[in-house]
Image (cartoon, rainbow, N blue to C red; front, side, top):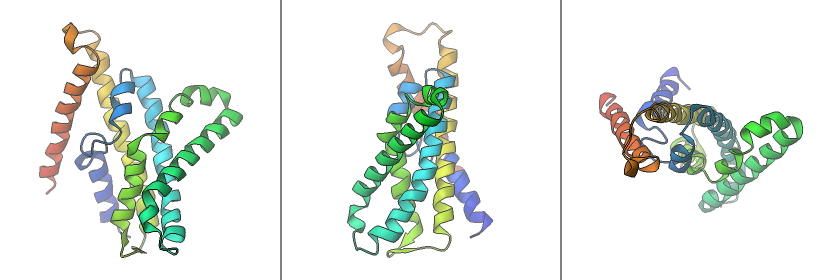
Length: 202
């Protein structure tokens, strides 16, 4: 493990390969929930937590279950089941322990189950930190750190988008462009600007 690798993961996850604006994963929640900053932040925090924990759990499932049994080809369905089960478990625990927190996150937690960004990070971790069925040195730490950084990249994109859309409420937008059409146009422009980082860091 080295600082350079952590820095590379951080910069690439936030800017170069942002999960929403470069990899185009999790667009449904990005467009639907980014109308206001408060729900966008709540969704982002929930996604950050789930992606981080799912990165750790799916790494363990792949390393200690799928590889020893020769079932690597089942990784996608295994990861989907693990993520869906984990989200449901988190939802039940939050509902039991803190009803007030559940009222904040409860509406967003079921959406995370079908958020392809969570599955995308789990698959990406396996592709990056396993070679020929063997984990690289420090692969668990890298996987968890990448989960955190991808969650932060998701948060960055959500907050930028919600800030822009809140300001647009005070503008005279033509009726055909209101809401989703304009949101997609803004997302496209933001994506182009983030893709500029790709050439800058080469």
